[in-house]
Length: 130
Image 1 (cartoon, rainbow, N blue to C red):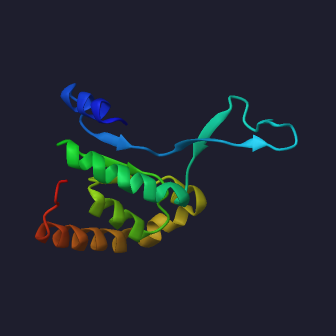
Image 2: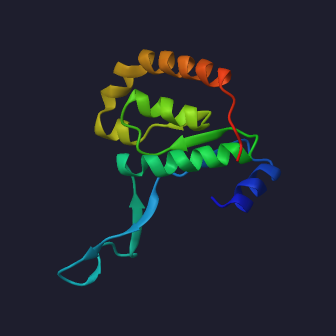
């Protein structure tokens, strides 16, 4: 979401912003020399895009006052904490639930403890705007 879009969403009364989930990609079939997907482009998701989206969450959270929801590539509890430290108020869990539905239950308590500790540490260190 471009800067004018996120600011317009906030000014227009948005309650929160969801940052990403997938990044548009293109796969070309080398046998047919044509896109592998009928409409040419499709969403890329998973752990490989997480660093890009963490950056986007950080940048957006520095520019708006409404909550920012980070979305993309979360595979473990540490990923949730990383999003929170980047400025996310909440995260969406998609990839981890798709890959291992029981992982969410197994890591629930650990996640909340780590997020609380990370937020306490983050409050002691104020964000610097560039």
